[in-house]
Image (tube, rainbow, N blue to C red; front, top):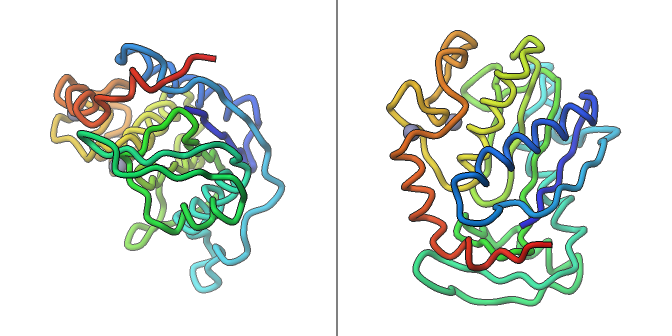
Length: 221
Ligand SMILES: [Zn+2]
Ligand SMILES: [Zn+2]
């Protein structure tokens, strides 16, 4: 599986560092690597449609959707949709138009073909997801996530926790009631600082359940 990384208003090296930490963070729990390649891009602008004039803030989810579509448009490989317990169907993805359709088709987290691309967008902006006014990040299951480093006050460890948390959602994990687990919901920096970088045992076994075919599908490059 590829990970396409975008940075906006953030040093590209920092975005790459976070992407690598996430890839390694999840890879070590699986038999074979989750992410086999990282592609890193610096975004020069955000989609105007994501700007909320009234709030004078960016809509994080709209930005994320834009970049997920962007990375899908660059795809020219075969896509296969895999659901838990078996194949739900297979589709050849040969042109950008199809990728757009694929994106609109509400593809689910359980699509884990090696050529499936995950998107990680790292930004440093003021952004919201209703009803929250400022967010650490947002994720779309099976597709990608946005990590906003604005609220983490240059603390790389906190940034990695946010990235691990959001990518956990991308991989199919929900919020966890164990406060030490990276998948616990953090309302503020205090709560974020008091959890670990890693998913708890319960979340790890969920991950193994969600991705039973993952290790056998991954083609190492
Ligand atoms: Zn969350
Ligand atoms: Zn957990």
